[in-house]
Length: 130
Image (cartoon, rainbow, N blue to C red):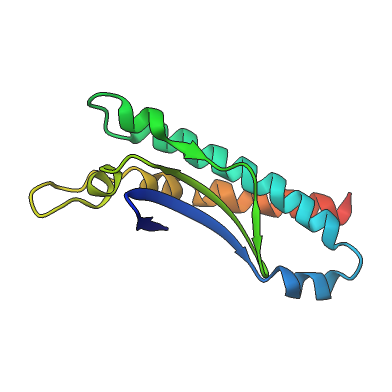
């Protein structure tokens, strides 16, 4: 997760796909395919949770929430993102000297860790056994 250029973004990374490839031999494309599907499912879950808990005053912040359903491959890491491009979002998420934090991205991830782990375990298990 990071806060740069007035954006608040939570990133999900799957690290170590090169090692997984070595372990699984000829299955890597199937694993990458299900990893993409699992990331999309996980990001959708986080996005829905963040939308449900984001503080709403005008609706601008809530309406700006996005999730990136396309995955990026960076070396041996697969990345997807949930976030907003509203400039004041980091102030809401992390607070300021004059304003208490009202986080919505971190709790959205924390609320769903178990479900996200289950999604990945299920999708990868299906690819290996199905």
